[in-house]
Length: 348
Image (cartoon, rainbow, N blue to C red; front, side, top):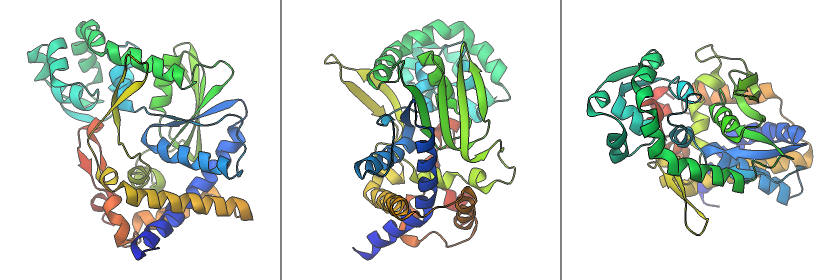
């Protein structure tokens, strides 16, 4: 193995391996009666982990896991104009014009925006969540026009969810994701019209949430009930995990069902991890190999062990090897921030 590949593989084993090992144990403990649903960008790695463990007869799951290519942007787009989902979609931080909000949070193309909203409205600026009620007031008269624009997305999404098995009444979806407030799970609970469970690295708002007539139950493996800037390093600096736990295609922003009933997926712009995905795959291989080794030989980590290890990587300069640093880059368009580098942000 070349020196660079060895460094990538070993970093995966050290940085991601213990966390994935503890997470896999939690998934196995929750699996009875559940369909493991690996969500969004992080889900690509989780699905790869679970399928490899199954292939090696190293985990027992009642149902095979599925990888669901969704994102907040895609779901916000599909539910644009929904009286239930719009308040949720406008509750996260954002600063900019209504035009930018429609592009970055809801993934609309310019021609779609101009066909549904008046030009004067698009020039208004907002700061979310402070201006949420005001933005809702501005947009509500145009809900029908917005629903018409996104109707192909909504129809294709419903077909995709059905094809993926999420509507099977005998399998309660177990949503697997990094965290935090379960936005994707809650939207899917509304769309599917059924109860769901979510198992996250961190659940900032754990417990049962009522979504229309159904319930979304959220659980955290490493932390529950913590808030941003409360001193929880694993949450406050979770961007390090987010950079690595991503998919080769990046963030999905739209979906269409073609005439042959297959699906066409549309993605946002590439971050460094998409441009160097072969390197990231080597990191994943190191992490998954470490999980397999642990399960074969009875090696265990506690949640506190994982938290302590993350604290070292996230706070101490030069603990992340030079050969890996180019992977730490992620888009934060949904908040209007563009590309973000946690290495610079955290001065590590």
